[in-house]
Length: 444
Image (tube, helix red, strand yellow):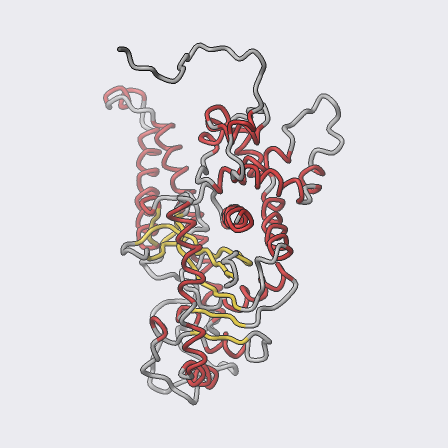
């Protein structure tokens, strides 16, 4: 007796074209993103195409935004992969509604609408608040390192730049001398395209010179911030220009001269070498997030190219207020945000701050109470049972969304280069995570 199977005919033709929506289960994330984007204000996207006329027919911004948000929410970040998914994935086809933009079109749309895509994050946060998912009773702030679209092997130290410039200048001089030799002498040499060799080295010299100038400009700004001046002769001075000490201590470097180990990347100069959590170093950006404790919605997302979190607490609280129109009641942050200047700046802030002064909330062993009065006050505050109970929640509130971004959505490196573009992409990632989170919470 033969086995009876359910009907299977790969060549079966449909008598009537089916609706793609029938192929997605009810409550799918694509439906939620589709309905949510329809509620958002996309006038800024449309404004770029105003007056284009009937012949200029770009893809509809609403469709492009839906596809981009769903792609990031489902862990697809490459424009080539997004274009492929529009042909192969039912959810993408539902959102595309018969449109198949090429990967270059998707890439250009993302790059062209940086400000508009960043502004979508604000709208998503405010929509989450209207849905009751953001309470602003307690927020936790943390930073996470995300790899830049640049290899650390495409970076060069300041010392190596100086040496490489000297080597290239010597090579160019030698090639120029060879180019001036007589025709007879040139015929005796191995065949070599001298103009091309000279041009290649000159181009390399220009790239290194530009990187060296960027390093030196950054160092001059850092030295000025420390109170140094171009004519300080390496001698620490006070505001009146008098030497600060009589021991003869001097700065190790001239004003504006970087350390020999200072590095600059050629592919993404805005990125910086940062230490990875698992060990080692990479070209990275530092993604800052402020997460509301009620439903773990990211209410503020900023990006810096400084590996340290110190100095970001104030700007993150300002960003939360800008996103929501309200300051949180309580803010939690780990020891990376500890800084006397930060505590002094936020002394009158209405938010109740709980900032650890040591790893995992441990106390700091050494503290000069005379020069660090605000840090001393924070230490006394963090020793109270109320502070310990509040701070105990920090890790569960803020580190989970950072883990979702990297390990669930799979976003571990930026696709765009430059701080401004990477910051817009970071907000796009956080908006996508918020929509994914909202879809799950509102469906229950």
